[in-house]
Length: 488
Ligand code: ADP
Ligand code: GLC
Image 1: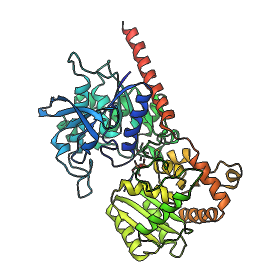
Image 2: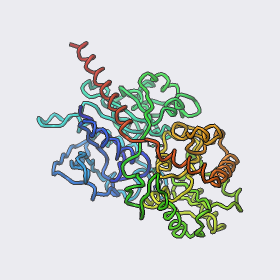
Image 3: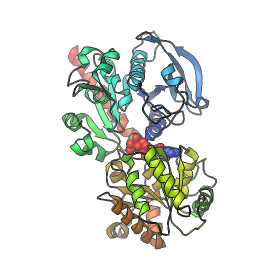
Image 4: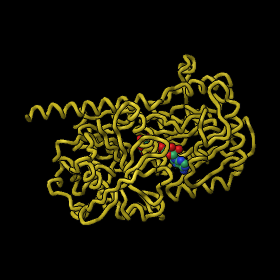
């Protein structure tokens, strides 16, 4: 089974969020199951090339008059083959893969990712005698949505498409469609056309043999107007080929081995967790108080994550004996508000604006609770990391958060299944309530240790999810075999 996994980011080569974590872990798990899987992604200026071991193979296709270079190699310390697609629209832009320094999307994102999609298709379809030709291309999010569309005339390659976030769809005007030189046959409501515009995401949904998303609850939610962002009807229509598969935890996130941590710990011995907490309090300029709860948030500072509500909630708790640390970057208004809060309350609030992988690991390890009041959350990885690191997740009952955290109400505390705090109706008052409820749980050491231990013992290994993807690949190829038989 030959799979080409197309993605716009992959840890540790390049990361902006959870898609990178998934792209860095799922292919490895699938490889362990015996799949011949290879990853293809753009080569950005910020790609950490020390993680790429070139094997000398290079292809130089010319796509719509533009010369590109595709380099083959291995991900360092693994046997995972990687292909990097190099073109100045990727490799000559410093910083974030999707946004310029002003925080706005690169103006030519549709051109950049259409070029990437064409490069993937061109590469997959090469007819050199010894070329590795995939049976399936597994594409991810809107940036790769044109791949299934461009392959729609081809019978020999199947498509699996994963939606990591339906809120970003890659919708552009008709002039863009024309500029991209896409076949007019794709300008139809049952293809890429979307209310007079074009949608990359529709390409992935309509032309794939199988659609997955990253949690069972999100798979249901996106079929409703509230979470479907205009595509709920289309997804309902394709419900028979849509499945939610929960993300897992990659090998880099384990408190017993995590190389970003100064000390390690496990379920039976949390002493080092509390050492890390004290170091963090010191590092973040907060009073070093072992018994004061440390609540953290890490993430993109955008409305999806409920950061506005979290800021309002913190504002309502000026005298509460808790400490807050926020690590993130995103919209300037949220960065500003957070900086202001930290300046006003240096004893209680500490803020780090930016992206810091090491600090993210240390915060997961040293915190007592993780605040994740997302308005929607396809899967969410930080609540999984929190569970594994003995950090109580405080979440909103949506998407993957609903699927992974068990609310610590009396019944769940009594039967030992509670793992965190789950908010049913989200607003800033509910977050204030949840923080106070957390304090009451934390004050009762026996109860809190039980919740922690239950969280730490949850199994979110990637292997289970990888098996589900593997089954989908088999299913897809099976259908293919049947089609061929019918054709013969
Ligand atoms: P999303 O993909 O929607 O941003 P996820 O919870 O799936 O959310 O994954 C986010 C990933 O990005 C996690 O690994 C998280 O630790 C990481 N992350 C987000 N913001 C930062 C940051 N400012 N610094 C370090 N890591 C971050
Ligand atoms: C998206 C989602 C997040 C998910 C991640 C990886 O960025 O917002 O919930 O965990 O993709 O699938």
